[in-house]
Image 1: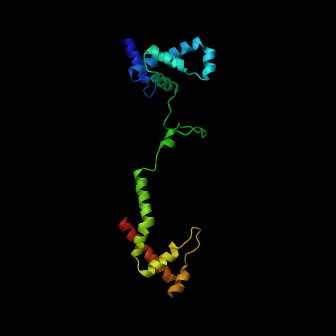
Image 2 (image 1 turned 135 degrees about the vertical axis):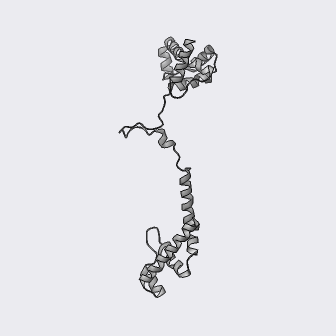
Image 3 (image 1 turned 180 degrees about the horizontal axis):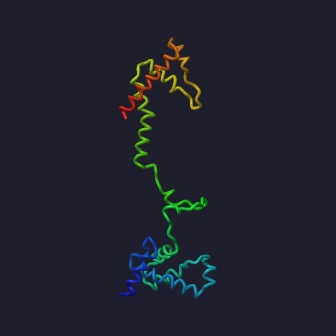
Length: 196
């Protein structure tokens, strides 16, 4: 029973992630390494030259499976588990900028974060229905002034009428157009906040 407790302790503490949970995996965990060394001793140079790595050949996999009474798939899986190392989810706190990125950096998905989804939905609404609804709350002259000043502008910043251009169209001063525009923007802002 002492040997069983020692084996249990080794299994639980060998790695952060459990390696052997089933009976077949436990058999492989405790015997695979010694069997690999035994097979390497039998044909070291030929084996390494044939494989090009320190793994088991197909024949060795079937020998281990037969000897331990487990499936060949279990042998392959356990060899892979034991050969691989643990990877830290977070990056180590060092100043080496050439170190590979931690998995947390590329596994995180920000697109489905609830706050970002709400913000995106609200932004889309403002860009389409929100602005249209806010414009409908204005009188005809105020709507035309806002449209001519802000909505008929090209991506490069060109287009759109100046205060003086609109003053000439409506026969009022540029200052009066600015006042109408400011009042219209205030009214639109109020309409947008009420709908949001």
